[in-house]
Image (cartoon, rainbow, N blue to C red; front, side):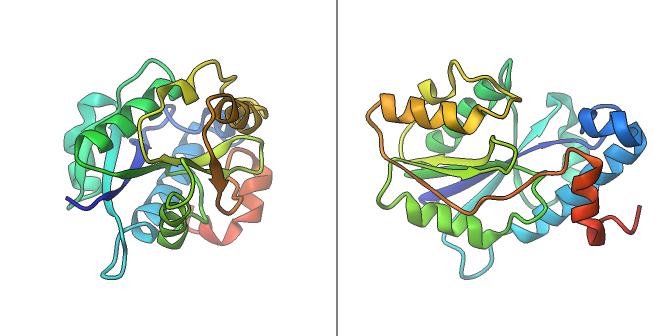
Length: 205
């Protein structure tokens, strides 16, 4: 097993179950279509190639949807997401990667249109001299986190789904006496303005 393991966290693009904030603006069906387009772009653009220094796994949700994911994203190892909130889900995903022999592990979601394998490789490079790596999001959260050992406390006491997530996480990392580094700041798609910014992706909808 490759020492660098990358995990993608994905939900199945079922109408009414994804991008709920965006759905309030454009409708549930449109939001699900947007999510599918972005996710399929991420599946392609983060797939390891012959020069990549990492292996990839996919953590799926809901837990009973393995069959649909096998059809949607063939040829990738699948594991169910586990946890009561986003913090537990990320902590458990990282644990699963370390349990599979990773010496460095990085996870992301699938709703960041500009995410690609170069950014994933950059994150693993940062972990050569830092305990934790984070990819800041423009809304004050983060889209990527990675580490060289399990630190579940990083995900505790965080005000999820707020603009304080990145700052709170950095404060926790510092309080734990760990070093951290960052990779490129990116944005997700949660509002109509975000769709306009990435309009070229959604002309098929």
